[in-house]
Length: 105
Image (cartoon, rainbow, N blue to C red; front, side, top):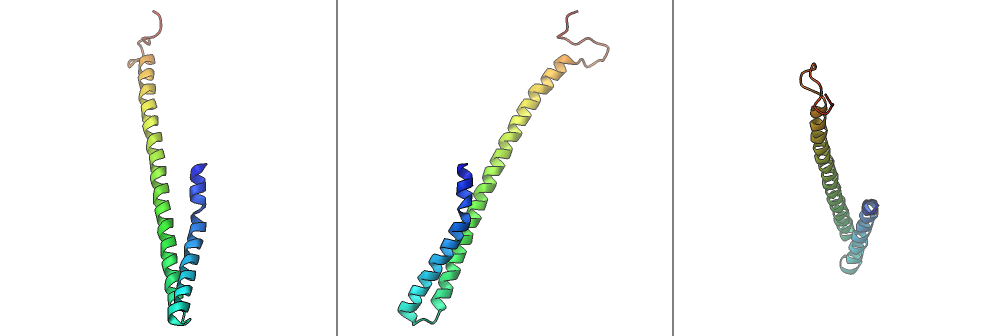
C-alpha cells in the first residue's frame, strides 16, 4: 500500500513543480525585468523539466521494483519446479514396465 501512495503523488509533484517554477519566474520578472514575461516562461519550463525529471525517476524506481518482484517470483518458481521434478522422477519410473520406487513390492 505504501508504494501506491508514493506513485500516487507523482501528478501532484509535477503540477507543484510547474507552479513553483511559474511563480518564481513571475517574481523574478516583476522584480528585475518589469513584467516582460521572459523569466516567467523560463521559470515555467524549468519547473516543467523538474517535474518530468521526477516523473522519470519514479518510473525507473517502479520498473526496478517490478523487475525485482519478477526475478524473485522466477527464482521461487524454478526452486519449486526442481523439487517437483525430483519428486515426480522418484514416483514415475524411467521404464514404464518398472514399478515406482516408493511402492511396496
